[in-house]
Amino acid sequence: MRFLRSNSERPTLRSALGRGHLSVALLAVGLAGVSLTLLGVLALRVYANHNLHLIARSINYTVEASLVFNDSSAANEALGLIASTEEVADAKVFDEDGNLLARWQRGENGMLDQIELKLARSLLEEPISMPVMHQGQLVGSIEVVGQGGSLMRFLLSGLAGILLCTVLSAVSALYLSRQLFGDIVRPLRNLANVAHAARRERSFDRRVPPTQIAELNELGNDFNALLDELEAWQSHLQSENESLAHQASHDSLTGLPNRAFFEGRLSRTLRNAAKYDERMAVLFLDSDRFKDINDEYGHAAGDEVLISVANRVRAQLRENDLVARLGGDEFAVLLSPLHKVEDARKIAEKIAASMRLPVRLQDGQLLKTSLSVGLAVYPDDAQTPADLLNAADVAMYEAKRLSREEHNTAGAERTANSVKNRS
Image 1: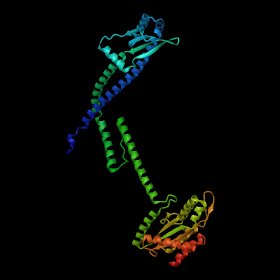
Image 2 (image 1 turned 45 degrees about the horizontal axis):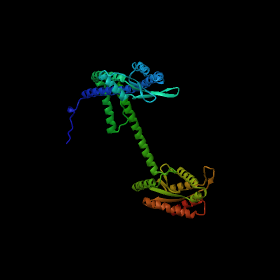
Image 3 (image 1 turned 90 degrees about the horizontal axis):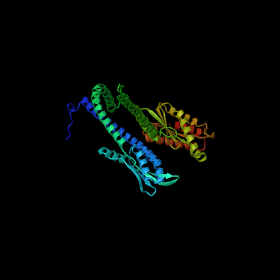
């Protein structure tokens, strides 16, 4: 079973800052010191290896003559002259047959010398072997082992520096934690308040005020930048949702509402009309030559015709009317409010008349097309959305039958008259 600690049992910010500041300071100094020491050792290792190669080349040039004449005493003298003044632990000279001709070895006087030698063997490239050439011919070889005196001194000085910096950092951390207590608490409280507002209230418009401490000011700026991104992302999501909702309810080719959107609007409008005892009308539109245009000119031309039909129909409607593409070459128009049935007939005639002008394609061709229009009025022709749309569809097919051998203009006008007489 878990128990929550009360606020009185929790550590104060002053004590938490004191311990945290001290721990962070010691850890930072320790890690920095160790890192710098390791980097220094690596750099010194590269330098020592390079220096050891230079020493080996010097020994190579010096003992070349001794190898040519196979003079062991001269080789020992030349070897000792160079190796004794450099950081060399062991140096050997071999003749061309691999026999030891001369050797110089630094004495191990104490434990420190042994540690230096072990350190050199673990860090340096050991041993360095180099052939001795005379006039292009192999006359012998040398082998050099380095000494780790410089590495040992550097490590000891590095450890001493780390220890000193750790002590100074501990004292400074305790002092600064008390001095900066007031300057830290206020910015943190402001940051917490803004964070709580963003989390609980989704208030992304609040921002953290600036502060004098650079790190906290940078933290506040980063948090403000994050809030900017969250605010922008929230706006982006809202825009994306609106775009997706629009795509789900609109036709991608013409930009008109699709069948689902139209049927939803039709149902709501019909409920309002029934509630307030009003009239409304539905027009069902169908292109008479769309299949022939697709077959003769291609689907791209058919798409241009559909876009032109959508634009022309939309231009003939009132502000509150709705036109939608139901699919293929079929369109539907919702006329509401409708004060007189004659208004619906006039709009149908205007839509038919708008198609008298041929459609100009992008390549300059002119195509003649026409629309058959069916009209259904609520509550005269139907009382439900499906029945109203079906009645308009039936009227459209009746108009198409009457105008089958005529142009769309005459057919549409005959449709309007037919509806008028039937009413």
